[in-house]
Structure formats: structure tokens, C-alpha cells
Image (tube, rainbow, N blue to C red; front, top):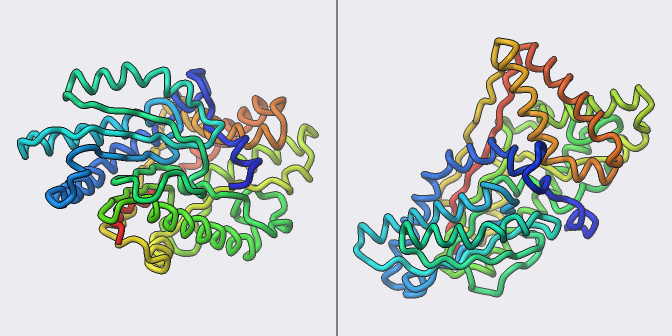
Length: 363
């Protein structure tokens, strides 16, 4: 990941009105949706425990792109609960659990660390679990752990973020992503950057995992192969809000033209192709699912829906936008975003979040 992006990109910290901790409902819903995949992957791994005493002694797991807030603790809690259930059935001792929480250095690790003692005490009290949690700051597009260290890796709603903005996007004017008016080379550049990044990610994780390790990945995707026909609605609304500020003289058009998001929503088929071509992992499961963010019909509920969309988008994007356009316009920008989102919902649009979930086994 480029140094500038690694230093500046983070979800909004703290517990304020626009913090990620208070505006991560979609991410929590995705974690709940993928819980059966998590359980199946861990149970499958446990089947090999007879010949792998390390698994029975100490389970070493990593959550990559953990962010902060409730999502950071939920993943580890669910992994411990699944192992506890298995051990109850098998009448064996619950192994010690060493959990590594990874995200970029700008992440709000302090919020995580403040909650760790009470969190670990709760696991000990409820399940007798000895859990040891460490933070690992750094990009998951770089090496993070020694070779043959980890037995299980989890990552949810992080791998759609690229290591950098793709190159040669100078002609992507009045867009901040793969937009409706983006030329074909923009779509190719984003797809190529995702392939480079995801291939590198797989290779690095293969080195860091034990031979029988498992990995469960979930990230944003799209429903059809042609990216130009499945434009991500939220980034279009952000772009329109920025152009509204251009028209009002609050933002320079050249600043919009020079800004592009390091984000890519992949198609299930291209993800499968990259995994098979890279070759480090066997695919156990690879599926897509949708979470429909329904637009309510009555005005009061629709206003709540607009506020939810606006705060969650701000919680995710504000650090990137403020670094490029400045803090001063953030309130104005997201007021315009809310207005444009209201129009979008009034036209009967039903926003959806397409996700890809992959269960992998190291070869």
C-alpha cells in the first residue's frame, strides 16, 4: 500500500455521531450472514486436529482489516464460541487462543486496546477461554507475520480496498471511481489493480499460514460481470455531491478530476479465476449474496434511512475525502449527499450490498 494511503486512511475513530463504531450496521449484518461459513470452515479445520497438536494447544488466528468498534470484537468472540462448542461436543479442552487484530496504522487501535481486558475476562468467565489479543498495524498487502505461524485467517469487508489508486486515470474526469461516464480504460485499470493486489495478498498469506490452515474472506462485490453496467450507487452519490459543491464554487473541478477512490467491487467469476491462477489455495466455498437496504415508503422512516446511509458513508470515506479536499467542506458535502440520497430513494431505488464470501484451504 502506498505510504500516503496507509498513513491517512482509516474509518472514523471514537464513538461520536459519525464514528465507524456507531455506523457499521452493514458490516455487522455481513458478519452475521457469514457466520455459518465461519463455523463450517473452523469445523473442517478441526477434523485435522488429531495429526496437528498445535491446533489443540494454541489456536493462532488473525482478523485482517479489523477496524474498531463492535466488529473488531465480534469476530474473535464468534471464533471462540465455535471452538467452545466443538470442544464441548468432543469432550476436549479448549485450546488457548492467540488473536491478532490487523489494520492500517491510522486505525483507532486505542479504542480496541481499552476494551481488551474486559473482553478477555468475559470469554474466560463464560467459556473458560484463555484468549490473548495483540494489535498488528500494517497493510495486508505487505507481510505481517512470520512463516508458518497462523492456523486461521479472517477478513471481512476490507479486501475491496486497493493498495493504491490505479494508474492512468487522468481521463476519468468528473468521476471519483468507475462511474457511469467513465471511459473503458478506467474499468480495465481498476480490474488490473485488484488482480495485482488480491494475488499478492494470497501469496503473502500462504507463506504465513500453516499447511492445513483455513481462510475466510468476505468483501463487496457486484452481481454481473460487466462492471460498466453495475455502478456502485453510493460512490455516484458522493460524486454528485462533490459536483454540487463545484457548481457552488466551494470545490475546484480540477480537485474532483484528480481524486479517485482506491476501491473495487469484484465479480464472483474474476475472483475465482484469480485464486485458481495464483495457486496457493484450494477453494472450499465461493458464493455471493445480497443484503437489500430497503427504502421505506413513509417520510419518517425514509428520513431515518437517509441519515443512516449518510453517516455510514461518512464514517468510511471521510478520512480520504478530507485529506484531498480539506476538512472545511465535509459538513457541506454530506449535507448534499443526504439530499441526493433522499432523491435516490424517492425514485423507488432500493440500495443493495452485494458481497462475496470465500472459504479457502492452503494447499
